[in-house]
Image 1 (cartoon, rainbow, N blue to C red):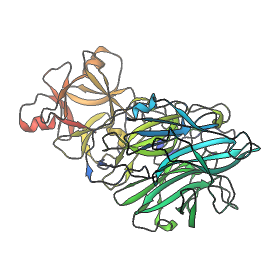
Image 2 (image 1 turned 90 degrees about the vertical axis):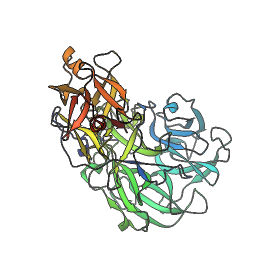
Image 3 (image 1 turned 180 degrees about the vertical axis):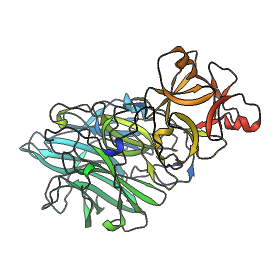
Image 4 (image 1 turned 180 degrees about the horizontal axis):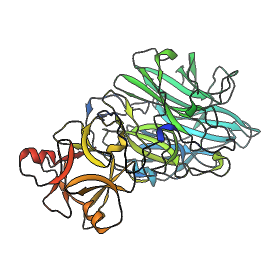
Length: 502
């Protein structure tokens, strides 16, 4: 959440730009791999060994009119979700045993704003955490007599199920300055619990910076040094407002990654990221490096605008990290974006580069989440597109080039088609037995060429093979780095015609 916007037109963050349709750009890339993960008390996935992780299957948006989403998977087998409601008047909570189940789970109001004074207005960005066998909700609130006097507050509940029991107000989180502050979040590194948040620092021209401190004896108190981690200085951090807010942390591969949201809350909103070694002094600002470009931003091709205020959770099988965030499915907003109720909670898989850094990709289109297809016989190589041509390559850091939605086949008959993620309406199709990614022209020929029967993997039944709909007996396979539909007979050919969905 940020202050009201001036009447300026939105500018899309640079990372959201993509090549013109029909000519997907080729960028340097890295092997994406997910990690085995465990839920910990801070609600963050824990580091694990690198391995291929199965695809996830979610439908976006998850929940309409819910901004600043925070989802945590608890040891009781439930996911708990809270988020900002458009009325800014209460804190809600829902739970389900699956992430998709949160979409239809009953929602409970666990706390209402005060009718006067403190905590009486602008109830923003709640987060739920399980600490020392108790539940805590961090949130921001204004006053009834000064709605922009935003400060951070904490609720506590000792019940095992936070939808039940009573919530005790533990009061305001005290920081060095009595100024605009919000978006408190907490995490643990090497046994030390930290609080990170956004605040307006006196004598600085920014709307908010991101800060870090150790937690005190109680999870509503900080102690010791307060470190300024992020000051919005880049162009993409200062559009509409000079904002860094909504910090969230994920830990992997011996490093700590802190994402934050930047710029105004319209289509300019995007995610930046800091990186530090898990063994470094996290309270030393020099321990952190800042990405010079957004790691996640608006994308006109997929129709997603202003992605931000994220959190992280894990898939049901514990093998994939999941990015949770909000956005809108339109760019232009009439009036103040804070009065626009249509930010939606969304989910997508977070991939990992070979160098151990997260790969956010782009905000995927609404509907079923896309997958990547990894070659059975070439570890770390994926189906991707480049200049119309479909090929198999390792190190695809331009992640969306290797992501496809598996949808009902254009030719019907129980077939499937593979739709490009970053160029919706473009499908994997064969022409002259070679495979391309091309725009659907609506013809019967295109529909047949772009449709495949999904079969158990020819080399591994746990994988999949794609048999041409209009040329039965020919399968999608790679040869010399390119994709074709060909008959297969040998063990090597069956291996090249088998893929694994990730």
